[in-house]
Image (tube, rainbow, N blue to C red; front, side, top):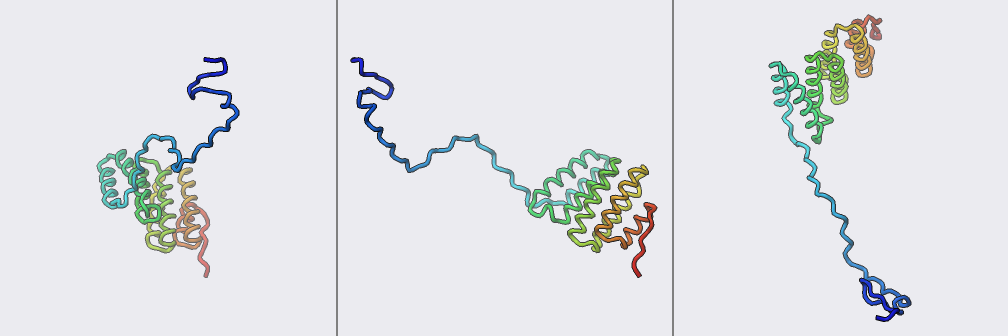
Length: 194
């Protein structure tokens, strides 16, 4: 071997190596493969058909049997599953599920959560059906009845004020429900214009 020759992995290097332009690489017609990623499981498809009435009946049966923890868990699961369906956020069944969650909260003694769920259902029914629809009126009455069972004066006053604010925004100051709540809160009742 002479002193001008060096053998490396690419072969024999000569004096021409440094003066000869490197051949340009031929473009590949296929793009390089992206780095491989670990396989991901396919995203679960949201259930397209959740039997809400049957599931609510099962939840209520558990609650009536004194199995409140199970009933609360199943109501949460139903709410999550139904919300994932295509019409889950705009359907009457959503309000039914939320009222059941309020009912269960009232059975566990969590009056604040119960009234909050019921008020949420009132707002949903009003947006779905309108403020004067019988379902909206019935939801307001159920919320009022639940609120009346609260014995803690400070909590009752705070939640009653929230109930009144909700009813005023939905049905207006001269609605029978607004006047009834104002009276129960000890506030002056606005009279309907003549």
